[in-house]
Length: 617
Image (tube, rainbow, N blue to C red):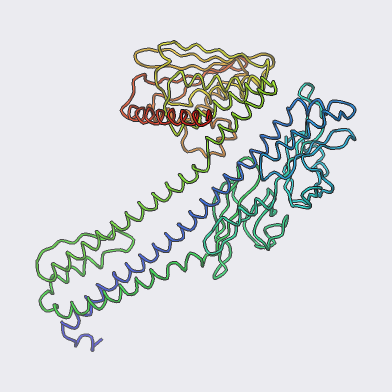
């Protein structure tokens, strides 16, 4: 203490000011490094989740394809007729075999398609099966198919005469008579497990991370070499926490063995995609920034010491003021802007400090902007996975084949589905004419009338002067679907659904009404509150059955204001009426989107003409 008191003011001030300057510099360096470390971790997690999302989209399409093919086969007339016959019809059996062969060949990841009759007659398959390790779920749960329409098996071996022994995952579902709903047999569609594994291996997670496909019991369905199929995940990662019901991430282990575990839950099947990234993989990327920070801090320290020693005698008072500012500053808060009271060296130092603070803030904003652009690019990449033109061409081919075989109802249904999807995937356009929206409903109703014959009647009353008015697309179809599922299909006998529109003072009012089972006043109030709430989770909303209504309600308020939301009226046993009102005049934003819509439509028409000319050639 006496030695400190005996030192000169120059020494004491030099030491105090140097410490006062260096502490914030070091804190800033550590703070910057911690931010960079956190951003690197978030980048790795976001990149991994994007990869899992892309894989999920691919596998979802694969599952949907298998389910769509199964529905087509279940209702096919030849399959129904073959299974109803008490004895084997060789000619009809060949037709069924040809159908299964066509379905299986159309998708490279489908290993086999099998129709097994309820009786002891031999099964019909696209590829003859000589041995199979498949065991039906009814061996463990006899009444499984009374509660669920289908079941996805674990990985099992399947031996065919043409392909040998391969690992497959099989979807099985009972075939029931379309007229009497009695059980006729079983349909099995098997997917190639190695095709799924190849896509998982190509996920490209950072640091050599692995991607696994699990079933609802956390058994491994597919993954890299070294992971045994149908083995529990906990066998390889003991003590791993249970997964949340929604896609997310969590940490596993500690120290050098610490890992980041990402998981993505698929919507259409009880599968989960899990990505496991070693934490050291992305932490090692911070070594360069740590070295750079250490060099920068060291240079700053040397500069401050030399500068303070040179100017200490001239700038005692300004440096004291600067020291007070720096002592009060916090690495967790934005650096303050200091006032410049002189134009000498101290003033220049303060100016440099202010510039550094501004530059750090700009760099932070730039990092945030780049992250935002990256997320947008990742989203565009995900959307690019869907190719509407391939879907349209495929449906057109199915439509043509149905017409060639005289299947008018199938051709009509496929044509309506093609038009329905073409409008839904309309190059991202948000607005359409009322006439297009009504045509979209007609296609949907046509499909549903084929699925549920003699179950409902549909009528529309739209004034001709409103047909060319523009409106936000895909507003009426979810309301029609909601009326059908929750109102008409739950009642006995023939139901009715109507769509009406009217114009009043440059406003259009649309009314969707049904005579289904209706709702109580308490249920209507609860439903109105649920669709109006923006805080509800998707899972909770899905259980209440109001996701489609909430989507329409949110889009109406987003594009037309708070007064444009849905209004629901219902009486138990009498039916339900849903209305909304939107302006007939276009807003400035809508006018700009209309111009973009016209340009893109002209390009689409031109492209269609070119394709037509190529087909004619």
